[in-house]
Amino acid sequence: MSCIPAAHVPIQPIEAHEGELWPASGSVPADVRLVPPAGHTVGHTGVAVRDGDGWLLHAGDAYFHHGEMHPDAPRCPPGLRYMQARMETARGLRLANQDRLRELVREHGDRITVFSAHDAAELRATQRQRVS
Image 1 (cartoon, rainbow, N blue to C red):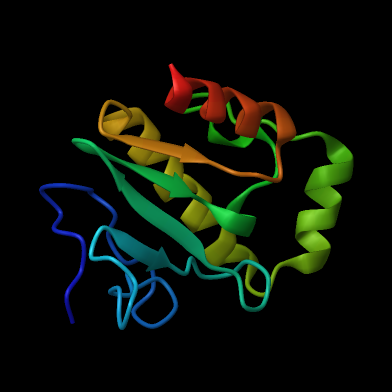
Image 2: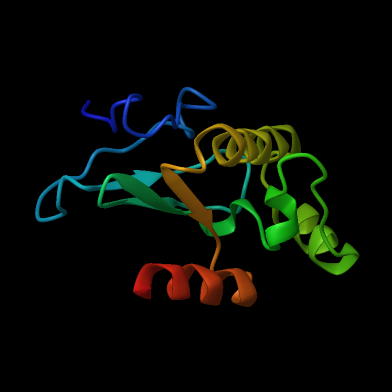
């Protein structure tokens, strides 16, 4: 299986089956990867897209509020936290995946932009960064 080389994007599988990077196939460009994090909603998949020398990672349902990706003090409004808990398929895996995403932000934020469209403010900020 062809995956994003760790030297380019340090995303590693969190769980052998659900956390693997899925290679692009068919008519999908090689600079696109599906990243199905474990423990989140059924059918959830993130998408990584090469962006110049780095990558954009739409984290899908991995988190719903930008505060969850704060590298040192993650936070989430109670209502969103409750909703995620109700939707999760495996709590431990979901939380481990969020830890891994925070690690990516902390250690490789210069090469990878992690965002979620579930957070409208974060999505707008990411869109503005891409345009400028």
